[in-house]
Length: 211
Image (cartoon, rainbow, N blue to C red):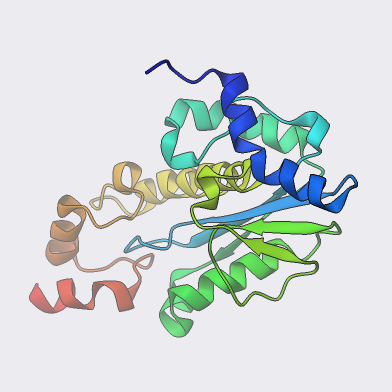
């Protein structure tokens, strides 16, 4: 199968946005929201809300999980430079333990979108949000929408940068490599060293009790 060109990818990633504009019969100011860090055992959940004008779209943008670290780092400044709105929100491990990860994710999404003054926000399959304008939830949205994919890159790059610094502050857990996710090495370190202040206690109770 022929490799998808950057132009073909951009066309595929903007189908959702173009359909919304066609249905509205006018130019729309659109944004996307995505999260990174719902699953890790340590660190924050980070959400980003990004709006980029349709005449400033950036080739190469895709679901952050499909991109290499190098590609994400190259795209991040281009997204920030071309965005008419970009904001991240961080919910930390203590609050995640207190209100649970789903509620923490929703809170972060509402916070990052709070200043957006546009027409429609596209979201990656999360419902029940209080947002400043109409929104549309899309299953696998980070692979189906340019705006959501751009948000996924911003959130991923910023969270990864934080976890790289956390690795220096809390050595032994290899946060630089696992970014807080529950790899076998990370779980073994929790059992041997106990939790550090970044760990979500509600996520690691089993491993601590087994230590």
